[in-house]
Image (cartoon, rainbow, N blue to C red; front, side, top):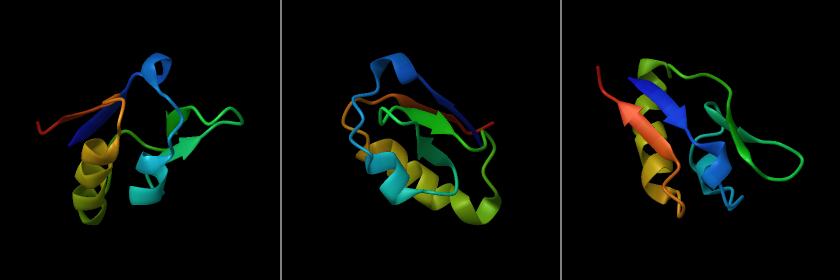
Length: 64
């Protein structure tokens, strides 16, 4: 699994960080950034949950 984000479309809701704080973080303006783009196997389910929780749909996951 590889995670990509589009921070330019982020609306700073924080839903991703609440769902998966080991992969996502927010800057001082609340804009999302990645702590890591390849989550550990035990972090994948929460990472997918974070993608679905994002109201701006800025998270993409490649399952390759």
